[in-house]
Length: 447
Image (cartoon, rainbow, N blue to C red):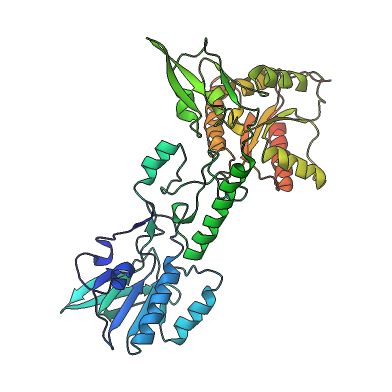
């Protein structure tokens, strides 16, 4: 259940009984008299520079409804709506027009010139800088109503830890994929809906609830769940029990168990593992392998890419593309006939997080002029944050090769969605041109 935001100190809330929030107004403890001046301040405590930077989605609509209702009951009340941006649903334009026709004054303020509320002789004075007309003025106000955001429940973090499901940076639950799996968690069998996912309207919550129920019904009707064969496996005789794989796993698929009195080992739950490969890269003892994407298989593909000598006039680039976006974008480029240099050798991995620093170094050692890694856009990764982990590792490998005299821009990481064939084509062309400027790898074999 989401929580009501208490804006203590914001615009003087808590210091003056006439500065209240919309929920406090609805509780009916404040009397509104005809002829009063009322100011509704939208985005009070939301869309800030830091902290609560998100839009609460429903504040503007709820504030407009409240203003219209007050006007209908008390026509002589003067209402000022102070907003930064009005963000309304599809039918919101009708609501906005209704508010204008009711005589509500809309004033746009600027976040860089915040509203100021002072008190003089028992009357509130609202100082406003109107950004569109570049005018600053003062309005006497009897009541100030703050449209405040919905906050995630404080219990989310505890429940997230128990169920091994992720939260976003704001504290709301994070879906598996915003477009492909908007009602699913990355952990199978658990579904989300309503304001636990993001601030939303009642009818949206109802529709999401119906969708989540239908998603939950599917495996119940089938009576069984299929597991992908691409999963991690721990070589127990190599495992040191350091726990780094456990820390990096986004799906709670790895746990540490006591093997003997003085030794822990990692155990992978095949029902939870998604096979992204991040744990395998993170393991310092190389005790974790990924079925069908083992290190020796990837190294063999790198070896095969350099069996034939490369043309002297074009750079030889080895590319690691994630299965869901980068590799699909390469397919889209081919279908759409977007050209890119033929000297690029592509290796498919399930996630860009599967690309090990050792893979990159081995490719350079075998003569690659450049190494390109393409994953999903940040926020769209099928494995939650695998692409961000890949970016961190690329930064490390850049520092490493730079320290031994190899230009760091021989290695690059970029993003492309499955439908961005043209973007991928441009990325490859740009990287090829950049490598031509740097020059060829002195370890490369040329034909």
